[in-house]
Structure formats: structure tokens, C-alpha cells
Length: 488
Image 1 (cartoon, rainbow, N blue to C red):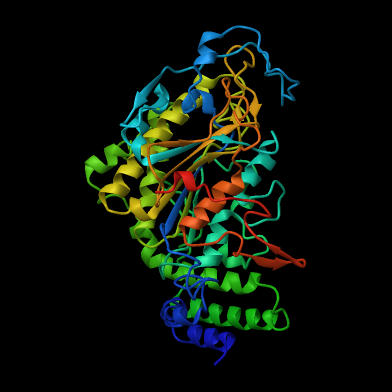
Image 2: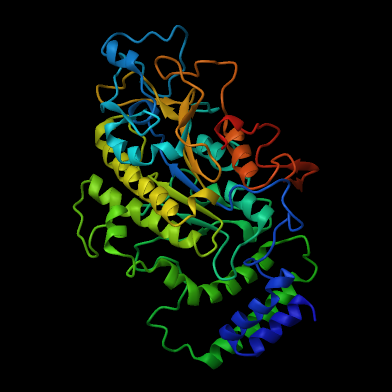
């Protein structure tokens, strides 16, 4: 029996519930997107250090020199005319005097890592973290720079990193997506869903959006309450009709994965109706866990002004949801902070006022990220869960106005933790100002970060490819070296 006739059969045997049952039966045959093996079904390229990935993306460009990359020279020369020793192509007009960090720095952990006061909660887990301070980008334009960090290319039309992981390794569960995206509760960052779209990979590998804390965290998973006219018989008849229409459409379109992906998504949605509510229900979490993540009592009312407590609640809910999804077999979770919504800013693009924008966002992020690392560690999951913190570029060491900083694609910071990463270390340095890498001949690029993550997952980044337009495309394009100095 072929896939089309099997699906026609499944809807003839009970509508949605029949779909759930048959989809589960077909799981081992690779007929749906969840619970399947990926391209490397016969084994990874080398031993696996990490099974799961959490990617935290700070939309709008977080300031490395105010959070993680301590620069005493900026304190010493604060207010003096900035002199970069070369012509600087600024994005706006951010070449004012040298501007010291807005928060005091002090050492944390056994490694003595200097952190800004606003991210002090990360001090509790800094010995688990590896910082990369010499990362460079290719552009100071938000959309292109976001694409570069999310997909490995600064143009649209390429798969997100989670899509490549899904394509290569497949799912670890039968009832939830392989790749889940938890966007900012206020909206999307630059490019929106294109950051996690599958592009030319089979469409079932794209990220699935879930919004923890919302009344309806998964859009259209259940029919609305007003749809009381839907009966089991009507649903079964409708699904049978849909199966016939889909089968007719798919005939002769073997090279188009979109319909098959949509069918798979419907089958997965049927299974998620049973499993997703439990995965997202945090009511059974102990109070000390909720407090650790910075969650406030349910029903808390927020004022219109952004504040650290609110940010901790929202970011912490995403981090707690990520932990619950990871322990249920989701392989890749992407957490976003900041949205592209103009003014007043609700993102990290702090041209006007670093303290106003970065303050709540960074403190809330630090509380949630620290809690996730501690929680994974106490559950024995940190050792095979790799966490990446990233942003599209950094911010300038000179001032824009009196309280802001312009874009700096010339150097910025990432950090990683868990999943075979050596904690309490730093790789690469920026110069005394935090303007460019100290060693300009040997910077780190996103390709190196991506290659390292794939390596920890057991994947040789040069061998995970997809033939497109006569080119063997890969996440790392034609670049990338594993950063072995930060591996345990």
C-alpha cells in the first residue's frame, strides 16, 4: 500500500484519531516528520558529545562591551575623543567620544570571568561557559547580519541551523517537532520566520513556532470553542476528501516537498493535541523552580514600561519551556529575545539609551539562561545539551549621543555551555577598545561556531550537504573550523 492510499485508509478509519494511530505505525517507515531518522540514519560521522541544542538569539545586537567583554581602557579614556587609528564606516553617527561600560564589572566563578553587573546572575554558572570574544560579522545591517548568524548566509533563501540539524539527525520523539522556535512575546526579530525556514531542504525540517505563556501557545492546534458544529463524522468526511485532493495534487509533483510536509505537519499536529499541552503546562513545576527561572505569579499585570522583572518572567518562561521540550525529545530549541517593532524599542538595538533597553533585557536574559543551565545540570542533561548565546553583531565602544551605541559588526561576543564544551574559558580577544579582534588575521566567524556545534552533534560540517542548483550546499558554506580550544 503506497503512502497516498495508506493516508486515505487512515482517514477512513476514524478521522483524527485514526491519523494518530496510523502515523505512529508508519513512524519506523519514515512516513512522517517526527520520530524519524535523518540523513545520517546509518550513524554519525564521529562520536556524539551533544544530542540537543538550545540557541538563544538576542535580536537587535547586544553590546559585548557592556555585558561580557571587559575593557579597562574605555574606563580610563571615557569622554575622550575616540581615535580608531583608521577610517571607520559607522552605521549611523556613533563615533562620539569613548564611552565606558554602563555597568560595573567584577570577577565571577573559579575562572574569575569579568561580567557586567546587569548579567550578574550568569556568575553562578560562568564556570560552565566558554566565551568567544573575537567573532566578526560581514555587515552592520540587521536583516543580513541576523541571516548570517541564523543560517550561515547573509542573504535570504537558506535553511536555519535547526533545519540542518533536523535534516541530518532527524527526531528523537514521535509526538513533538524536532525543531521548535520560541519567539519574543512581542513579535518577530528581523526577517521573522525566514530565520528558521527550511528553504531548499524538505519543508518538514522548518521550525515550529510555540509561544509559552500565551493563552494559545500553538496556533490552530485545536478548533475554536465556537466550532461546536464540528462532529466526528463531519471531520472524518472532510479528512477523506482532503486526502483525495492531496493525492491528486501530489501526482506528478514528486520533486515538490511542500505538500508532503504539510501532510506530515497535520499528522504531527494530531499527535501534538495529546502531548503538547502537557509539555507546556508548568503548573506542576515546584515553586523553587519557577522562582529560579524568574517567573511571577500567574495573572501578574504589567505596566507599559519595560522592566527587568517582566523580562525575566517572559524569557524565563521560554527557558523553562525549552527544558520541558528538551526532556521530551525535542532536538533543537531556538529562543528569541527582542523584536523588530520600531519605537519604543523592545529589542537590543540601543542607539539611544543602553541602560533603558539593555538593562531589563540583559538582566531578564541572565536570570533565565542561568536557571536553564543550573536546571539542566541538576537533571544530568547539561552534559549532552549544547547552549549557544548569540546576536547579529556588537556595539561600538564610542558613543552615539550620550547614552547609546552604534552597530559594530567588526567584533562581538558569543558564549557556549554544556554539550562537551569546556567551561570557564575564553577563546580569542578583542582589542583594547572592543572595536575589532586583537589578532585581525585570525578572527572567529559564525561558520566556526556552526561547525563546532555540528561537530559536538557528531556531524562533520563539510559532509552534511544538500544538492541545490548543482551545488552541494551546507550550513557553513565553504568555510568553518571547529574551535577545538573550547572543547572538553
